[in-house]
Image (cartoon, rainbow, N blue to C red; front, top):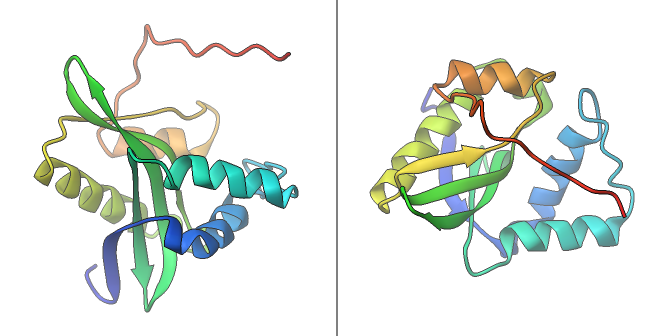
Length: 150
């Protein structure tokens, strides 16, 4: 699967490409997120990509960004980990093995910089849930997420 793919760490300089891919994936089924507020989207992406501890990877095919992983480095008692806040693959490439290829590249890259774990959250009623399980992630049965609308 190595054909025309380039895996690399990316940052705030690529925010326009990130924004385009992110919106194209997360504003349709099954997510249907409303990212019509461009200012809110820009701020969200800066939160993910533009901080000192941000860690963002991109996968390019023929110089086009087709997959991104946006997260941050978190120092935890069990070791330093990559906390993935958002991961997506271009919609028309999903199901082709690119996501698994991309995750394997991420795992190799973070091991090389001394990270011990990957942590992420997803919903259990979307295709991503099965994708992560297929790729060796396990569900933290005692972990609970809380939210409070104000």
